[in-house]
Length: 135
Image (cartoon, rainbow, N blue to C red; front, side, top):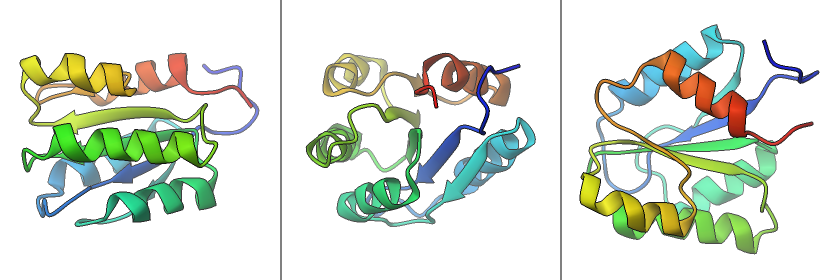
């Protein structure tokens, strides 16, 4: 169990025009069951809206779910926007259909992990607990 006195706050967001959100909803429910506090933004969110929601909600983690193929453009924009807004300690992870060859570029942009098909809620929860900021 975590040493934190408050639950880890996670924002789950669907950037861009991707309308498929089943995985994001399953993840949100699973992380709630694991004791996380989860905010789900819904589908088709702009990078600016995701950044604003993360700052407003004072989250520890932003989880970006993307299946549209726009990950190399949209995900680095979210990280850069968070950093520009002073949210340097917010952990940013991704999930969805992201080819292996694109993952090093995302890591260089500040995405700490990519969880693809077959990832378990437990695996994701373990990563978030290990890497989210301490409060």
